[in-house]
Image 1 (tube, rainbow, N blue to C red):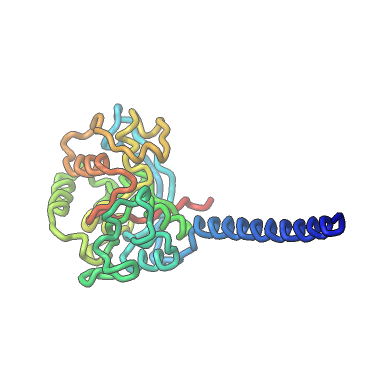
Image 2 (cartoon, rainbow, N blue to C red):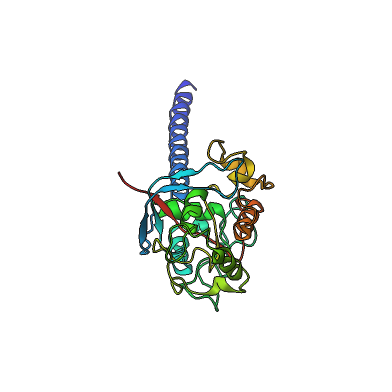
Length: 280
């Protein structure tokens, strides 16, 4: 009996070790698979980035009229296009319409696409991509080695018209923007058809609204320049607080729109462009 018992123990131990090794390999495989799923696959969009020379500007919202300093940075000359975003989802399948998690994008994410890998029949590949959430825009920017512009950076560039770095004091500035905002289906037009602004940047107003990295932080804090915020705060929109230029209705429209957003929202005329820190 003792010999049989020893043999049983030997074979039992062998199968136990073999089973443990198989489980260990399986767990390691799952970890590797999970790690690769989380990592963004790099993309190389061919759009040009422009150097924006920093300076001071007065925000539309805030409790005082103190100018905000903006450092030098790089900004995409145009919004991200349908073609570029298709390349991103092809290389990063977790951002395909059927794969994306609800916490990262609502049910209208890329809803106008024919399927996961086909643009809408009537869509121009060179038009700005829309129905994209803040999370998706952030992921795209990260994949491209970039980031989303801050609200201050975006508004700083948006002060310009075709000839002036700061055109907000021109009577025609806001009126022109309001007329653009009232145009229907403007988001379907291709990028870079209209004239660029002072910086050489295209389509700041005439195609789509655009996500910024801190799109509603100025609404959720008393002063966006000093208060801290985190991603959790971006799930909840809040009301506007104060304005430094009550006559600038075009700016009010932008800030009101931003205040209505949550980070997983997608909208038919909301797109994005990327920015990048200037290497020193």
